[in-house]
Length: 473
Image 1 (tube, rainbow, N blue to C red):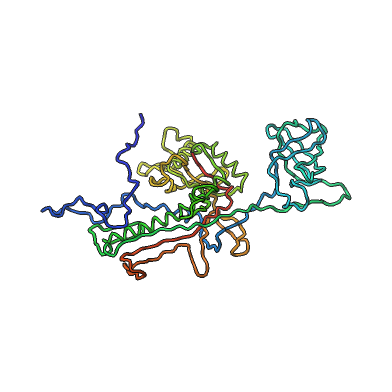
Image 2 (image 1 turned 180 degrees about the vertical axis):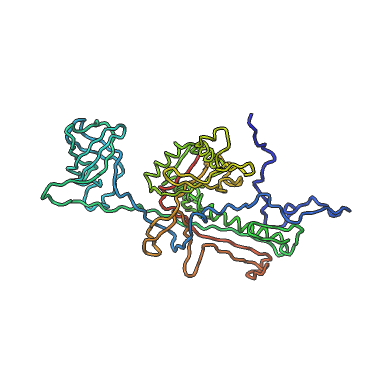
């Protein structure tokens, strides 16, 4: 039976985060009334290491101001049009046919003429059977102005190769006109996809009484951002700040819009509109690999084929949990013909004095893939270990894309992921913090306490979501 990690002792999921000094905040195992003075460690031991998880958006994105409750941007549509749910009204062998298009069509307002489909008379088309190798090339002779059909005359003498019951795909590959003929009647306007998101307000607060601020302890506190000393409230205030900074990132990743008739939409006491976080956007407008991790090259081949159909971004970064990282390492190690049952991969000079490297940082197969562990997906107090709605990783395209910026009034380069925060000449809500009360230097009220307030108003813009991949269970 394979060895297993024992369930006990486990890991704490609810560390003390109270706002005042309590017995549970201090080590009480030492009895100083005893005649024997014990050796004590004054400084806290950081048994969970760096507990903050905020780093993802700083690594892949940027922050820039916004002056509105609504952020909108346009993304380019396809240059060419292809319909994949079409059918012929003619039987096999026919020289001409009327093709009915059942795809979602471009609104007629985007066309200068009255045609509802983006095909024009005189264009040459390739029509291919979706379920077999049968195909035809033909020329469009008519496009119905009030219906989703067009007439085609085939170039082949044998006529139509597929049956009228087959589902076919159609796309234009050129055009052909007779000498002395009139020009093209209709023109097709460029189409854009318009997306939007709205910022949400994120708040946090820490409070400590003036008396507790004057209380010194024997434990020297420490936090990830360098706070030190024997005043316990310093630790609590700094941990509140770190927690708020994590919320700033997690909100942008996890946020979902409040749906109509939902409980969140109906409430009026707190925010009730939500926002479109990265996971939500990729799940709805991006690509999803479900049913576990891709563990073979054939799995990644399917991912690559999908990327070919999207933006074909050359470099991509995989932010993944620990198991996904192991699966990729094992997949790449299996490609070594000398590694079966051995440990030769990862080193070119496997000296006995050297540590064996069993991990990979990336690979190339069609595109460049770099992988890195994402602490947020591993943290036991957050997404680490959850089953329902588990996410194992995300593929993020590297680089930037061109969008129309409403603030600048022109096209600008923007990272695929970036945060827009509310700001103007008089108010900057990127990261606000202020102190109220009458303790700790504050003199704003008669309250015998110090209250530290935190606020931010922001939204995440996920540009080109069709280039992202979400890996779920």
